[in-house]
Length: 228
Length: 228
DNA sequence: TCGGACGATATTGTAGGACAATACTGACTA
DNA sequence: TAGTCAGTATTGTCCTACAATATCGTCCGA
Image (tube, rainbow over all chains, first blue to last red; front, side, top):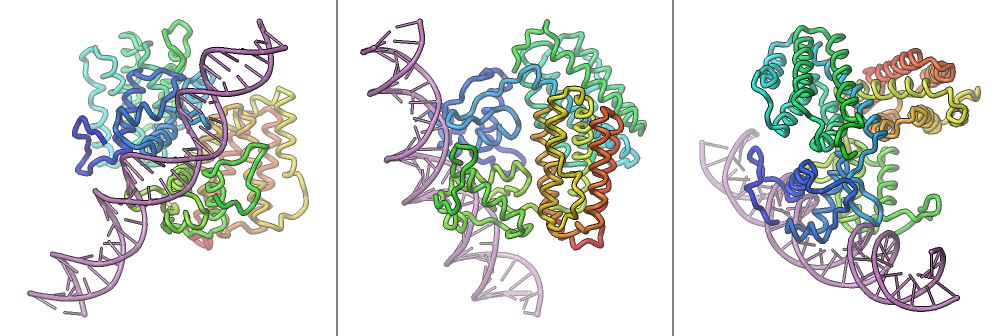
């Protein structure tokens, strides 16, 4: 395939499928493709210089992460999330990440785990204003992933991706203002403190509140949110 | 492809991929393939009479349901679940189905929904002894699916599949005795009553207890359970 | 005997072409 | 205007071929 950047990670060269998944992923996050849009195989095989089989593999992977939808005889379609979908996804995510926060807190007695966790979430303590929204989205994603990691339940981390990614696609479209970011940061800090203080109940409660607020934000009709 | 049985469902003819998925699925459930076993593409394409591309599509679908694992350059491997895996999966499943039970109970005021639910779970009230284990596994699966359905959260029903199927594979290996089946049935009944009585908290609590017991059963070292 | 290097074989990864099945589009007709 | 129908676009499936990688047995030296 046509490799524009030296696409590799920790030694192993990425397979063609993985590279295509990455490229499409970024296209989806950056709104290059818009919700409901069909992803035409012949266009994309030409663009990436891969075979149809490879591309279709990539589609399946993106479908598993909830970013596209595979419709028989119509191919891959960029997922469009209705308000109902959003509500449902947040309901699930709240349970999963609530569990993660609880588990993480209950494992902080292990100094090794605590050190790893503290290192991973360190950026949240910075007082610098978050000027770049995409950068903050990144910080946010890493924070939530750190908790999932600290939960010690590997399957939990994997399945949660399915419920984070589609929402991220929506967030890029706006609705993150300096205000809401500040709010989010202080919630992250409170949550971290509860986890480090080994208080599972508080951690779970704060996480659930945090996600409830995020959900309300996402569903607010005033946002420029275009329902992806 | 070679069609042995008239493989079709509700009018629409099943695609080749779907038929292969079905065939492999039954092979996995019935222990024709054992945990850790590699599924060799050339063997299976010959057996099913489909192309490698079709077979690989089927592998991806099974991987999404958690029945096989895709390892780079080694292909599809029948998933082997360790005790740790089992614990992790049950932890997640407990949260998801706990949520489902709670939501289902809170929607029983709608007569349409309640009628559908009651019809779906009707078999649990039968006093006939459950002689065929596979039949009971089926009844059990339907019961849990009825609750997921009644929850009204479609995504919840979909994601929960990922955490039910691998465990079902394990259950077939034994560990379901008349005793445990009786116990399970009475728990199902209590759970149903809580849901129909529109008591979300009780429903959630009973569901979580029910799954905790199932987990203990699965993890008991005395079982002939071969850790898939 | 043991363990490592090496080559042969098996298997998967990817490309590309072909055709059938299905969906989509626009012109034509009643 | 609405419905029909043919032409086109697109996806579903199969096939073949070769490259990349893993696996396994054999040989050699310590």
